[in-house]
Image 1 (cartoon, rainbow, N blue to C red):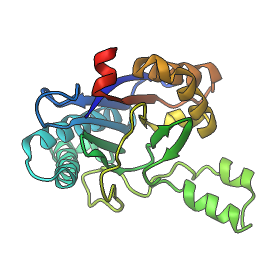
Image 2: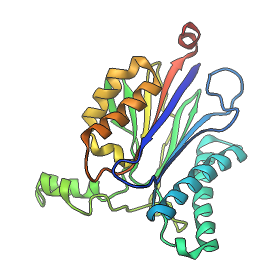
Image 3: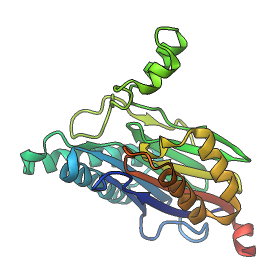
Length: 264
């Protein structure tokens, strides 16, 4: 049986406001691996729509996702998709109530940690990584134009540099806006976690760091726990001092066997 140690950290970067939101719960979730069957749920959202709209959209998405997951029963995949739809509906209601917010939206990653493994649903370009035994792998789909630009580079229709610097790279093909969801990525089955695995949820501001650098940092701080990993990743983003640095938020969750947790 696994326990799940978790932490999250964020930075505004070069922005004057914070459009990212993150929540971990729900209350009574089985974070320790003992007692109760309710999964630990982590949700992260990266808002868009300006100072007011983006911040509100991401907060509404996280709060409604977590609340809706808690309200629903049944299989975890259905609860995840139902929670996503509820978050999307909450954004729609918010815009109807205040039309000046039209155009606001958010990415969303929602992850459930159960004794059977890891399950997720995501919309947008916020990455979800698994770190295991020194290696890192992206788990979810990127719903920005980046994968298409990279594909054109592999075909020789763009250079690698042109693909990386294209101003359309971060344009989203799908987001939680209250409208029909164009693209949704959802796990097909639980991903069994091993003792010591890290699951990293992040807003795209973390991608100031190359994936290899994310891997190196997690490896360096893995033994120190989730709080150390999350803090180190955000420090590394801030150390780059990118004058255009976007908000960056990280949730780090470490799987720990019950026996290891007891020894600690």
